[in-house]
Structures are given as C-alpha cells and as structure tokens.
Length: 597
Image (cartoon, rainbow, N blue to C red):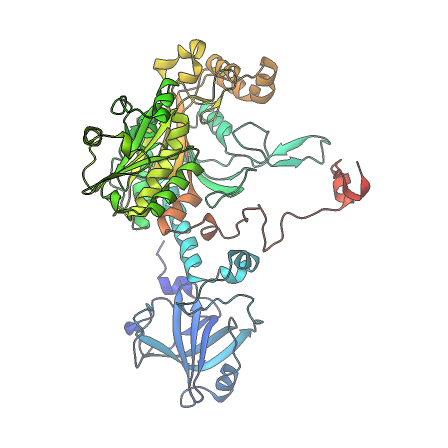
C-alpha cells in the first residue's frame, strides 16, 4: 500500500492541510486552513490572527488590499478561541519570528468563515511568557481549555508515539498482546481495590484490577510464551504527584526465562522509547542489589545523577565519647553519614533545612560537623579529633552529616539528607540520565509474625534462600528487580513462583489459612497444577515514563483527564451521587443517607 503524504493525511473536507510545517517552500501556495484563534492583534487597518491547530501556530494577516470586505469585517469581531476556516496565499513575513516553526511565513487571508463562536474563556489559552499559569484546580476544572496548551498537546503526542513504539518493539520481540479483564476478582496486591457491585448477583462484587498479574501468569501456563499489554490499572490509595487512581502500564510476561532475559528485553524497549524522546539510554544499564542500594544510598530507587554516597562510620567513631552514638551502636544500630565536599560553605540556616528534611523522613536528629581553615564547628565537632576527620576523608572545606541508629530508621533519613544536601550545594549533575536495575529485593517486609510481600505474593524466592522460609523468612531474598531512572521507579518485576506447593507455602508464610488461600488464589493454584513453565515479567509505568521524559512536575501533565490528589475529576464532576433507585437495583443503600441506618 502506498503511504500517503503528510499533507494528504492532514486533508479533510474543511481544510487542505494543517498549519505546522508551513515554510518558505510553501510561499505562493493557497491552502485552506482551519483552527482556533489563539491571539488577535487589531492595528486598525490591518488585523493579525495567530491561528492554532494541533500542529502549531501560524500568523494570518487580514487587510483591505487582499481580504474580501465581508471577511475583513468578520475578522474584526473574532474573539479568543473562536473556530475559523481561512483561505489565502502564503507569503514571506516582513519580519520573521524565530520562536515559531512557521515564523518565516504568514497566510494573507482572502476569505474567512467563523465556524464556531467561543464564549470568553474561563482560563486563557494564550498567555504572555511572563504570565503564570492559573491554579491547577482551575485548570483541571476547565480541562478542555487547559488541554489546548501547547505543552500538554506535546506531552500527549509524545505519549502516543511512545506507546506506538512499545507495541512495535514488543511485537518484533515475539510478544503477543492479550487483553485481560477489567471486571475481575478482588485480590490483595498492596492497595485497596475499587469494587464494582454486581446487579445480576446481588451482594457480590467485582474489583477493578490493580494489575493483570494473575491473568498474565495464567497466560504463561496456557502456553502463550510471551505476552504484553498496554494495560489500564486501578488502585484506591492516597494520591501524590506521581500517583493516580487509574494508570497505564506496559505489562510484560514471558516463559522459560531468568532475570537476564527480562532485563535485556526491557533495556531494548527503554532504548527505543528514549530515542523517540531524545533521552540518552546507554546499554547495558548498571545493576545494584537492593542491599547495596540501601547501604550506599538509603533508598531502593537511588538517583545516581550525582554522588554523595552514604558511608559507614561505625568503626571510625567507635572511640567517640558521645552518648547518642554509643547508645545507637549498643542497641544494634550503626553510625552512617555523608561527606559533602565543599559543604562547609553552607550556612547554619541551610544546614538546618537539610536537618528538617532528615527529620521529615524519620531520623530523630542529624549530627553535623564542618572542617575549615579556622577549625571545626557543628553539633558533634567538639567530640571529633583531626584523626576522625581524616579517617572520614573530610578535607578542609568539607561538611559531615551523620545519623545513628538502626538502618530501617536512618536509611530513609539519609536518603532525604543526600537529596537535600545536593540541592543546597546546587551540585552539578555527573550525568543527565542515570539508569539502574535494583535486584534481589527482600521476599518479605516486616518482622516474623507480621510479614507482608516485598513486591507481591507471587515472587520467586532466591534459590539460595529457600531454606530460610522455614527458619528465617524475613531474611530471604527474592528474584525481584526494579528499573530506576533518575531516582524514579519506572517499573517493577520478578521471576514468578511456578510451583503450586511453593506458592502455597509462601502464602502460608504470609499468614493466610488454607481456606483463605483456596478462596482467594484457588484459580491460580489450579492453573499452576496444570503444568506451569518457569516464567517472569515486569510492569512499567507508562504515565511515569512520559512524565520524566518531558520533565513534567506531575502525572496530571501527561494524562488527558486526571484526578486531583483528593481523587476527584473536576472537569466531569466524578465521583458523584446516584439515586436511591439506582442503588436499589444493585441491592445497596448508603448508610446515613436520608436517615437510613
């Protein structure tokens, strides 16, 4: 099939092409264009309109020497966001506008028709560079106008391209896209389910899927070998800038694999996506175990664009006569900290701001010491000798930031300290794009007797740690892995348990009774008993990938119709109440409504 030209693709009954791409080569042509009035500048005899469509902006000029009188009169009545169709001749602009891709040319309008009149916009689509955006709440309430902004249109266009590339890449690697159910069975995956009442089966509920996890494992047992899906997922959890109640993920599963297979495929996928977004993704990505990441950076998603690793100074400070350090070590903790080269230039106020970040992350108190040509200063400086500073590799001009206690307390605090110190120092980035695989996560979280899955209940234990399931399950590692980009988790995956007896054992270790196991996971165990291949996979957050690639501050800037942090859709007004009659059809009533109890 012959590929259509871009202009043929853009052609409709009401236009001959879109405005984007018009340039010197088009001078002398007479296109018919259509779009929105982005801005109007009325100079009396002459009138200029910036015409906008999805592809860009173009200046359209109206004048008595070339515009039909009726069209010229109508142009003087145009308001912002009116929809027009205009026919004319492409000419060179007297003064080029280098900020526009079409800035060398303009359309001299001969004929103009207003297709739709817009009321005065509640929020402006055009704004001068020095003007701030309206509040996010107002923009979400008037999302139809907000979505006309060039930034959001670029973001959503890139999202479209990335999804196309993902589908093509996965197909080329032999993966088959299979859609899994949206109305499914409630399963524990770390967040609350959105429940959907069944009208046909009164008193029973579907759940919206938190992920297609169990279904994709069943597809492996069914022999599909390699599966993927651009999947919609739903989680009823508290929201943040990087969370939405409904989200999209690139979901992947494959049979007869080990971690290297999945990691290799996903590195290829990320390289393909990064190329479209003009992001560097040098292969292969470095790898680091979870234990090493937590020890060196205090986080399982460390940002490696800059240094400032965490160091263990327990031995170095063993002879320091300071009660906080001694009691922490005697209680089984460690003394760890960060050396900030040149950090002695930070003021007391700036250091207190770093301390505040550490306290917010759970560290009761952050200790610090400066080493300068005048001597030392800081909350712990009088307890440290020159030898202590030397042993901690602290040169003159450096700042030491210390925390003492169990790792579960100090690690998140030192991770926050590291990030805050980097901001305070305005550290130059060692690299702009830092990719990392974090591997060998703990199989469980929590202490014995109150264990929770480290990722989800279907992760394969590390083969060297199978014996620990009986003796010390909280110490067992897993074959789980996360993909991290610039300190953001892009995706999480693992090799799965393909043996029914081992899966049952893990569920028992999590505190489930045999009855609960059969009720909640019986259909998975039944599938595994049919002969399951070793299999594994990963889920990559599409929304988050787009957000980080475009540098947006929130997922709401890369999702067409997002929810607020209160889980409300302000434009369409969801969620909303339903009538008692509608509830009655479902066998439900709202407790407390109208005096009901």
